[in-house]
Image (cartoon, rainbow, N blue to C red):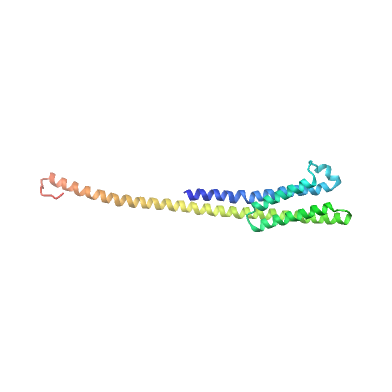
Length: 192
């Protein structure tokens, strides 16, 4: 029973804490990256301005992707989080060097690729969450059958022990009762 409770706690952590947090932080990083991208467009900058500078947003993206990597349930998700963080850092450095229209086109193209990387990261972390959920359900199913089997075993053993004990106790009492009945009937040479 204690083992199943401990296993349940570990399943909750594995199912919710890791992949769901990784997915949430990957989405948060994507949101911040899109705010970075919007801040580059003069017409949309006023709409997207929430008081954070491009550098602050870049730091937040890096932190969010760091949490996504740390909470990843698989090496693939952790690697994608690291790769995406590196790509965002490179993109941010390119933004600082933008000098001509060709560079701006390259920056926009790279941003689209980074968004695709974010989508891949979210997809992989969601798959990890689904896999952990299936593992949790399988473990719960196993412990359900284990508990049922243990209950049946305890009932059978308890019944067997009760039968053995009752025979060991009832037989001597029945013999003594029979001897007492025979004595009461007048048969005085009965051995008790």
